[in-house]
Length: 197
Image (tube, rainbow, N blue to C red):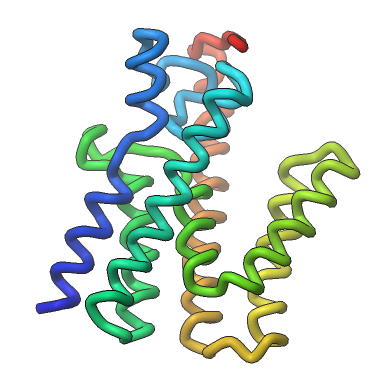
């Protein structure tokens, strides 16, 4: 019974369409028709600037953190906690509020992994941020963090369930990004691209 409640809550949390609502409220536009068409933080960053992207990122990260936190408050079962993270990401990717479409789940997944392995994730993300700034590549910085998280998890003797669960969450993000970017490149010419600060 606990698992079903946690899955339901996690999915609803993940489904909350942060980027879509923010752009709709402030700019009276549908972000799905802007830029890549992805209703997520990176599309907000590319088309509306850092100020709004940061807010989207923070809220989306909190979705993952809250999903894991609620799960652990209801039951200490680590497998269910991992499931909560995966479901939150799935909710973000396939939001019930956006006709089962959504973003890539990067920020929500990052929040979930941060809640599962706070120390390892923090070190990995800070390292990835440093690398990204150093080489001026968001993708390389993100990939660095993704690679480091499980390595640091094992090194710091984090529970195998949490490490493997985090790998699954990260893998789900990578697969969605690969699929979505292939799709968005094909349709990019039909999208409106703009930049607002």
